[in-house]
Image 1: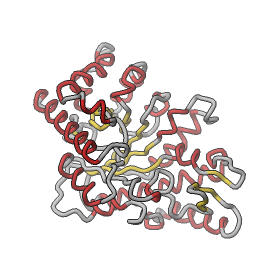
Image 2: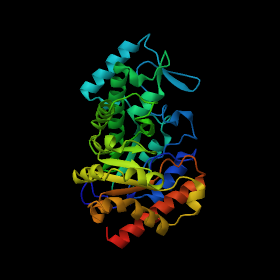
Image 3: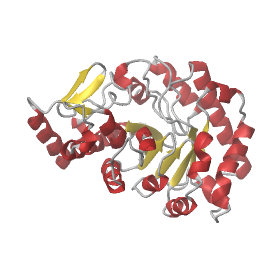
Amino acid sequence: MTRHNEFGCLPTAVGSMPHKDPVAACGEVVRHLPEIPAWPQLPARSALESQYFQFSEGFPGLTAADNRLCVDRSGSFDTELERLYQAYLAKDYDCCPTSPDHAAGLHALLAWPDLAPIAVKGQITGPITYGLGISDKDQRPIIYDDTLADALAKFLHLKAAWQERALRKLASHTIIFVDEPSMSYFGSAFISLTRERVTSLLNEVFSGISGVKGVHCCSNTDWPVLLQTDTDVVNFDTYGFAREFSLYPAEVAAFLKRGGVIAWGIVPNNESSLLNETANSLRDRLDEAMAPFTRKGVPYRQLLEQALLTPSCSLAGLSTEAASQALALLSELSHLIRRRRSL
């Protein structure tokens, strides 16, 4: 990596793994992704590691009932909200840590001996997904409450900043992805949000990240919305949605021109597809995904240099053996491309 935006098709992971043992999960990550390890989220280990619970510690008025999170504005809510805003204004990132109970893989990786990565990757649930998944007492998603949505974005800003500071113990270069699976509903009847509101909430979280910041959406979405935020990296399911992404060559070219990175999610995350793929077949598939952009004048070399490679999405739904196979295939593909293209 010669500049922060030239990853040259190095591999990293989206996040979730199927393991219950954080040491075993970290072992797989470190073995297959030594250049840019990503701490493993382990939803099978505990419900506290699900996408809504994992980064919930400390949000004002948050309560759990029937495995769902809800904001209760009674009691000490106003005091907790004031404390959050004071921490935000004071840049008190230690106010919003993520504990081992909620992220065992993060803390296992932080304690891992003898790491020498180029960069280290983390991830956090994004404000759109989080805001749609948590309700108020009237069962209305908090993203539609201006006060709660603003507080949520600032809360995740602090959470991302704390995580980045923790990961800098392992490497001076960090990458933090903001995971937004619910952006696949943007523009549909399921989400009533403007482009400006989405951009504002995401940029608030990005502003807490001083290193490389990325956004991940594992399905199709209105890609120009994400490409035009303050993100440095856009990660998408290339295996399943390359055609849809290719519909925006001008926006992708502009994103790359300003130094952006595409994280191509080219390794499938289902076992039947994994059995049918090799590093060579995935290289051909990746070339096909890049071809619409080269035909529009984006240099192939630029696409490779300003690229990361990832699985298409979470590996949590696989067996531990298949997850290891996916990471091994990802690593092999990266080496194949980098060797052939002298990256």
